[in-house]
Length: 114
Image (cartoon, rainbow, N blue to C red; front, side, top):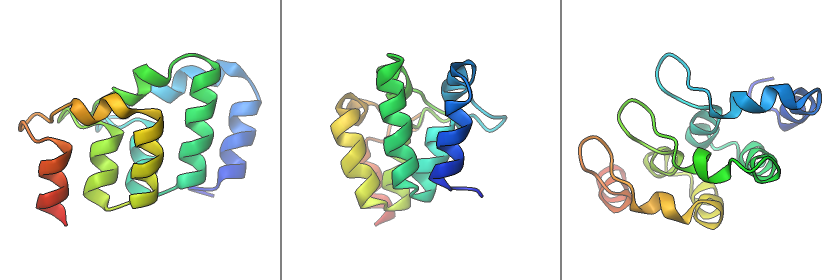
């Protein structure tokens, strides 16, 4: 059921106790939104961003970086997920100003990977 938006909705509906997991990073430094952006799970991204808005952590999650200081916007750009990039620019426009550990902007990454 990986990437299945109904599973994610049900999981998060069970309790807001799970809301803190939205900003948790795994051992590689990735949040659930980093992974959803990399894999292009647009409906999950929209759902999580809307849920984040309800619990007032959208900005924190938009700016959350992995170990290489990449945001979910960086991940979406590297993966070439245009529909995800569009959603992130609406919800997280400030993330476009961040640079990675290697001092790469979103423009650098777009040119480098596409």
